[in-house]
Amino acid sequence: MHDNTRTTSPDLLTPALNRRCALLGTLGLLALPATHAAAAAPAKSKQSHPAVWPHASQVPGGVARLSLGPGAKRPTAFAGDVPLLVMGDVIEWTALVGIPLAAKPGEASITVRAENGGSERQVAYTVTDKQYREQRLTVAPRTVDLSPEDEARYVRERDHQAGVMATLTDLRPDASLQMRVPVPGRRSSSFGLRRVFNGQSRNPHSGMDIAAGTGTPVLAPLPGRVIDTGDYFFNGGTVWLDHGGGLLTMYCHLSRVDVKVGDVLKTGEPLAAVGATGRVTGPHLHWGVMLNRAMVDPALFIQT
Image 1 (tube, rainbow, N blue to C red):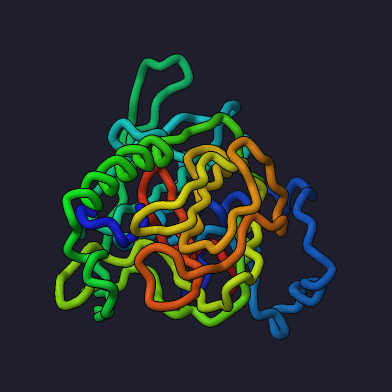
Image 2: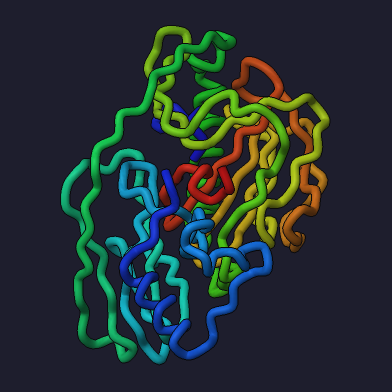
């Protein structure tokens, strides 16, 4: 959920991806884009392998890319009891694991289940520490010290959005999860910042803030279906998109919402307009990305 709640690199290629590219090349199926035609000459090449999105970053708020090996069918994988997004093909399957901001550094694992629901195996990975900066903001006192009426409204909205965040559809995203930045502008606040409102600590910033003028169109970063719209106490005007497989995106503080629940959007189609609604210090877009119910850094999904 957006950080306003009160309770609330270089591109990395796994060894599994390298093996996959080698095997595809051996089969004569690996085609390079024309813009990378010079990649065959190592002296002139800056990148010997295609980039992958999201980038791997095994830190709180990051994404782990875990190889599940080859298989005739897409395997199923879980973080606890939460299904994970599995991408790839029969040559190489990869589980994408959203790591919660509250995750403790250390060893972690996912569970991979056999097709027949019988045997299970664990795939381990390590979460490394990351220190995020602190940001102090001054906002309207009523948005920090809530009245009983506002507290009751917040609780209703929190419970509603918890249901939204649990959305899981069988629809699978495109093979490439590289996202288009939904609005042009300067990043005014980065993911993971420790937020202090009017001197009171709150949850870390769970999205990317992009400064833009009120009314600037907000565009879909990937194909998706609208699963929620609303005007919320902290988030203001809000839209949630479902991109399939537990990958969701949210857009907050909107001045106008141009879509309704059930609408299906293509990449680049408008969905709303930038505003300054909810708990804000000025007009901007708060853009959040959720993967297996964990808010993760949107920067891992875009070209930087």
